[in-house]
Length: 103
Image 1 (cartoon, one colour):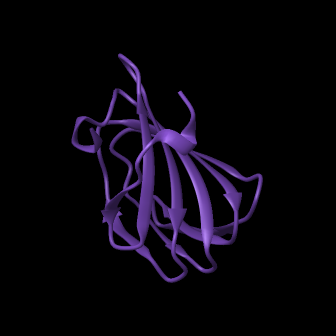
Image 2 (cartoon, one colour):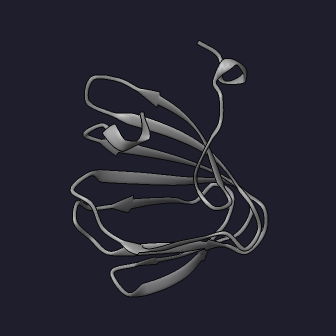
């Protein structure tokens, strides 16, 4: 498969994702509009976030930091987190197990 052939879905306002699913993982490629926010939430999935481009303000377990291109964040299962794109961003997320709601 090729990412150019995958239709983008707006999962939440300003978050446009191309999703790839295996048997036990989901891989999300996000194009995020400047100012778009993910409200605080948690889920049973383990998650790893990679900032490909842009400046992304991210709060994990009450600690806020601005992440830039090349930064990686490991988000443990059931840990509260939220984020905001300070600039237009390109992000990648890997989730395990798969995010059924993103199919």
